[in-house]
Image (cartoon, rainbow, N blue to C red):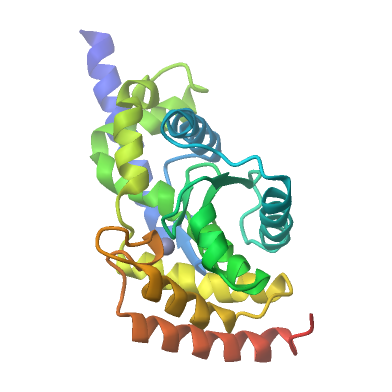
Length: 262
Ligand SMILES: [Zn+2]
């Protein structure tokens, strides 16, 4: 009983600390803000591994050496300029006709063959990868997860970190179904805008033309039918607004980081 009371007290103290942290938090260069994210990088990597095991059961990964090396080459160039470098980005090519790409916790990026076939050049592929890496750098996946879990589990996650991973069984007990639902649930409009702006910055810094992002949106729109709406267009801000934002941001980054040279 005494232990139980102490446990509750401990959780409350941790939650108050967590709330307190939110006001100063850790500076994230991708968002330009101080933010409190309870899910640690180690936990993200562990969640990513769970999700990857599930994806392996339901998807076929391509072994085409030419396509894979193209994805890897462009992906690593973009990953190198990402604001987030505390995990290794990994790229997987999925045999799927849907024009889609998505990211899971821990820096895993999945890119469909259907999307690669429809995009016209490396700059457009780079823009899509940079959008996904933008979600990673801004910690959108971890934040989405955190928002869905509520205080109970956040308390457990913090306990898990304090105890070095042996205390709370929060992550294991959550089950991969919850994780899978979270991975495929939509980001907020704000997060999508943020990922678009980071896509412009990262693709430019990696040596690609960010203005190809505009054409990427047009291609996605043209080839999306019915329920086969790609992640990048799902519950997103208005397409024209996104195109305008990308055009404006492309001009801004060129001024800030110097003239584009390939
Ligand atoms: Zn997105």
